[in-house]
Figure 1: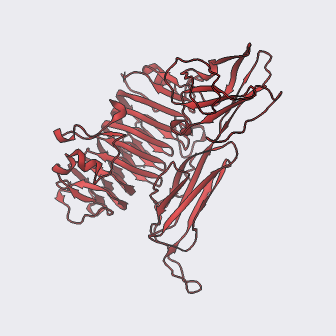
Figure 2 (figure 1 turned 45 degrees about the vertical axis):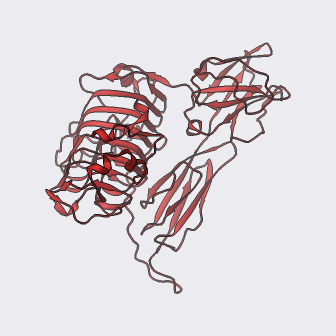
Figure 3 (figure 1 turned 90 degrees about the horizontal axis):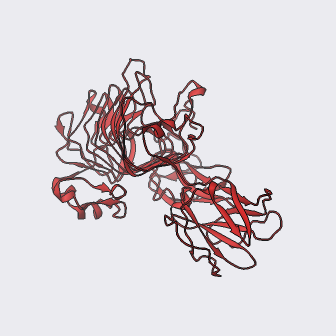
Length: 513
């Protein structure tokens, strides 16, 4: 969990004295990792702005790479989920962390003899883990795809040789199929969409039941009562795996999922599980934080947390009491350390500092998401997607809402560095006029664009480039053309649907169809 006592900000060019005749305008790359693996960079010291740096993550045995996290420095990674990726060195020191994960579970017979063991290995590893008799050993292998992100839904089984069975994690939804004696190691022969805790296996006349596993079918969220149990009911833990199974209309007022306080350890309860909206919509969100901070559908999404495939509409607000407490207010979350992907918010969001349509503040990943809500902050760091960008990754997002605040106010982010984002709101307003931009109020970016008739503090913008606070101009003919989005803008047709943009609408996420 993020400790707020640590000062984190956007890295600025360091002032160094030349040493040994070397250039003074060079920077450092710091690579971090957790206990499940290691990471390295092709160059770490005396790196000049503009150099291409390759970073590589190496998981330990029986561990898996999850994603990269840009801790500080505003580097834009070519890919956040590839174990080897690159970035262009910005004008400042950069710190990047490699995140890994491990999973384990086993089947046992009615005497609780763990002779049959599942041990997760990387795709292509032909070894298996033996615990006990050495007979009927089990292996669970990951295939490329969502299983690597730790939210697989089912298993498939094939026979190999010597009484060894291989289980392959898949995104299977088909509950039909039968066991097969196919000898190929990687042939998919049976799909199951079951709860792992309830899965039994009858092998050669002996019944084995899975009694311990970290991967499981999701807990279904079907209504407001289910949603309110997350983090409150012991059967709905904050690190649980959830799936919304139908559209939900909320009534009354709600409190955020989880909580966070900079000073009260008892309230430091981030969401660290997976919340899959499954293409469904949660309507009627009504969060009134009084004058408290960390408000949204989620109060705080931790490093291991993921929210995806979700539409939320409603109102999130916290009143400005003049003491800064009404800070970190967002439609989806007050603070994001994790991953937010394929998410949309509409309605209104208001607070004091760090106010955003998706996240009040971001130190994680926000990608392939959009906001149509109007966003209002009475102080600093106000943006359409995130109010305060402290690091991480914000890319392939767009905003159509009106954004207003005092300073560091932007169409996508109040401050920080974003990439491949499109600002389509009609106006951005900051009472301190020098701290406002069509893309960000302060910072920079890569390949960002904004509608040409957008007004910042009542005026059209003349200083506009793809990497500055305003982005380059686009007109209605451009952003009203599907070929522009897929060509010049470079957005992914596998994720986004552009079929309606020519009729005046905006791109939609395919998961919502």
